[in-house]
Image (cartoon, rainbow, N blue to C red; front, side, top):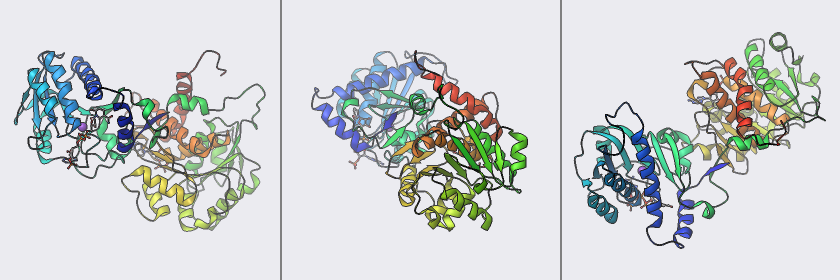
Length: 490
Ligand SMILES: NC(=O)C1=CN([C@@H]2O[C@H](COP(=O)(O)OP(=O)(O)OC[C@H]3O[C@@H](n4cnc5c(N)ncnc54)[C@H](OP(=O)(O)O)[C@@H]3O)[C@@H](O)[C@H]2O)[C@@H](O)CC1
Ligand SMILES: Nc1ncnc2c1ncn2[C@@H]1O[C@H](COP(=O)(O)OP(=O)(O)O)[C@@H](O)[C@H]1O
Ligand SMILES: [K+]
């Protein structure tokens, strides 16, 4: 697992570490890592650039008044020493880090008000973790005027809200962000994650001093491998978990087909379907055992209810039957609408519930649209309803009822295609049925669904929900084998 820490948590860790080191050491570590990454980028071939390498490259620095500007100027001084033409623009009056500015001029760089219109690399050292959202006017003007081959944000893209990932005012959009010591929530959450570009972490020795509980968690392949239930020689289809799918209707049979295709791609050993689209499911998936009603379905270890299911009296009755079962439940789509109207059906439930709203469904459940702080928005709903909440979108967020927040690092906008959420929900129910906790099942499903979207989109511009379902087994295989270790039984 990776984590992202708030500005205050980073400052606490920094204070501990700095007490053990000579003054200026951390800034030099940061600047050295930043300069190395910039030199690597300058060596790469790029369409906007005439020459390759540091020597002779044009580098422009937008320098703010604090240590973030200091990092940028020290890194630029290192590039100037290697032959780069460096122009630094103070963007907050004349306020710049004085020692770093002197180092830059000693190395041959210049402090200017009007840099060249074109540069190979633009370093955004306007604001770091001390920044409030928004940019000073001079930075906005320079960003509009300069044609940069590559934009590198120093620590964070300036202008974003570091702790929440909100972008309420103007902010830098970077190709690469070089983060120091740890990730921050803005790198992985909300609109700010879209301003971050490719993320590079420079180790400055902060790790041992960081709080063991990050503000936001980010799953990696190894987590999925550790959580996945691999069948052993003593398993049978029942012990691997039975998943029940209550989805679809005569009007929307496709939702039943797609949700069961997601469920079949998961680790459970048996998929049961209960609903009025049974005929369609049987035709597409002979592996699925079908009944017309939830009460006839027999025992399951997890249910999915909701996609294409309707919101009438009969649907409400079926939802009640699902919620009466002692098994964990995923509620999606129409089930969320019903919960919004009849919240009491959720009370007295002890087994885990995962809700998977997109923004409009969230509004139906919470009474207002999700705040720009999507981690807090998901956590507030999770706490109110005592459920796990998976809030969909780019950088999907998962929150548990006790306030744990996860940001999903996979996925792409092509996943916004009708039925893709049905596949996700079915797959998640299978993970739950295999014994994963609600929060892990939600995190793992978002991760693998996003990865499947990437596989399905390889070589294509458009994908369908069926393509995503078909790509799920490969996504699982690639993720689990990425962390294969000798001796691990598969
Ligand atoms: N932590 C670590 O381990 C390490 C941290 N390091 C580096 O330090 C960086 C943090 O530096 P920092 O604390 O000096 O804050 P930073 O963001 O540069 O500037 C704050 C200044 O900007 C101003 N200001 C704020 N918002 C504004 C706005 N919207 N528009 C205009 N002005 C605004 C604000 O003004 P004030 O609030 O005083 O009015 C203040 O003067 C960090 O990101 C990393 O790069 C590394 O060197 C080594 C290890
Ligand atoms: N802009 C986006 N970028 C990445 N993923 C997205 C984006 N918009 C939606 N998604 C993903 O696409 C899926 C859509 O789900 P949903 O809205 O429930 O679709 P449906 O109800 O048609 O099945 C979710 O997994 C969501 O996270
Ligand atoms: K910055």
